[in-house]
Length: 541
Image 1: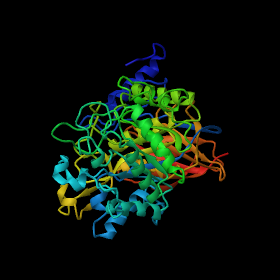
Image 2 (image 1 turned 120 degrees about the horizontal axis):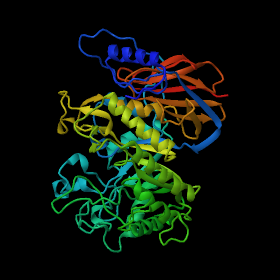
Image 3 (image 1 turned 180 degrees about the horizontal axis):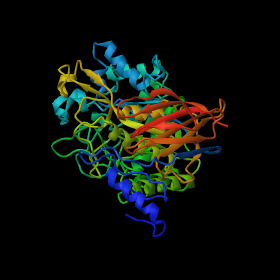
């Protein structure tokens, strides 16, 4: 502990407080001591604890940052079975959790109001069955195109159900994404590349046919966006099989594919989004095998792979937030580099197009087993915060919208009718449940709507390295503001929000026991429960 040499009376007082409370403190000011634990030794009576200093958040609506586009999630894999369940009520419950903008009787949201829905354009491994060498049938996908060049639009019915459910509930944007060419176009006849190399798994001379397939599907479903290549840096599959569809690709192949697709989409309003890099650093560097430095490679005039001048190509570079979220210093530095390179290529935008909790994350979080509690929700909220406020992303998209697995990378979870985690047992029916990952995502997605602008905000005169993480957004025409406050600590915090026209504001709280719980608060005394995410809405000055 660090004490001031002067003011001995203050020293004695502090020592008495620490002895009674049984906690470890960090001395921030002489008489202002935020605590770092919430436990006391067994048998101790509650001690006198100094109240935490009120946090002052000030909004600066005139200091505009990026214009927000959307928040989304993908239907990948699981929608093909769940979307074919006979129980319409259960399917609609899932759709409401993901897409609904309606409210419950108490004013709390019914769902998280996603504004973008990702549709996986399958490669045909499902029709191959076990011959696909993808062991888990949940991770195989059908293909709309047959080997003779004809199309069967009755394929992927489960996914089509959720696509229509999203549109009915007002989801603003749809995006089709591809993991592999159709299996009859690939070199090995599989929906994955077992070569271990970096080249795309496609037969010579088939690039134009693949481009035609993607353009045809995009036009049929009237997608707003097409993402033709996903995580091209990763090695998909081994000699004995793969865990899912996927293919490697170098930048030259991606550029060739996009150049082949673009003229086939001239009569549509859809735009091509490129990147989908496996992690952020492939956006600004890491180009050893010709599949990195993607922002400059695709959008800097004069490069051999420049595609930025094609009218069908959106001015967007996309990547995934995996493997770059901890420690905090690395998370921030990585996203600063993303922001820097994209600003050099202005007006290029940045999208974060896939994230879920995977692997071992600094020995704090793990994909397995399934964890749907508030600690994992807070981790997700922190990743979203850094992607929006440091990397300046305009769209933020989740990985699995729904999952039956014993894993932490979904928003909505499905158990077998028996109540157990049993993947095969969920094929025709199941029990639907939510997660804190879902609801903290909703603290952003439900309220930060397309077209809103992120604005500057300060926390207690400092940046967001203070006690809470803060991001703020405005809707210009209605002078509406949305402020998302993340309190990761074990104690309640109190926030004074400056810059509002009225002292009365509306709050939506997600914590261990509440999911976007609606309430009315005073802007000068906003209560943030321990370990919570609170969204505040009102009018700005």
